[in-house]
Structure formats: structure tokens, C-alpha cells
Image 1 (tube, rainbow, N blue to C red):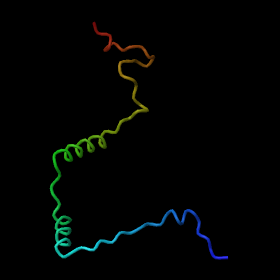
Image 2: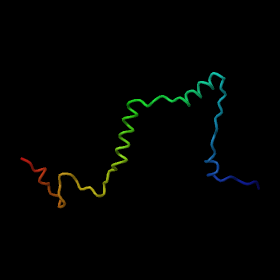
Image 3: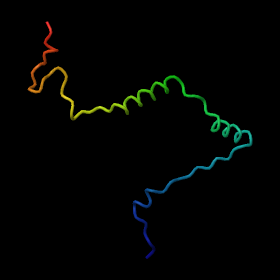
Length: 81
């Protein structure tokens, strides 16, 4: 009996795509890869937010709820008035 392939083997196969480019298309493609445009404003802002988040990760386990003391009562700072 011939060797049967396992389902996981079949699932890991990858299809490859080959592009056939003209000389002009090759030149344009390489120029685009080698001379990337600078990031726009939205990308720069997103990167800043990411840096701030990475520098100050949210600590959910050790934070107590705002406006409540350890007993669950409203804190003095929230009882203004």
C-alpha cells in the first residue's frame, strides 16, 4: 500500500506565486522597494501611541477601582460637595 499523507501534512503546504515582469515593471518595483516614502502623520501618531503603551503597560491586577477605597466605599476625593 502506498504511503498516505497525514491531514496535517496537507494543511501545511504553501502555494507560491510567480510574477513575470517586464524590464520597466522590474525597475519600478525595485525603485519602490529601495526608496520607501516617509511615514505619514497618522502612522507617526500611531507609533507614538504604541511607544507610550509599551513604556507604560496597563496593570489590571494590581489596580484598585477609581473612586473607591479598599473596603469598596467611595473615597473622600469622590465625595466632594
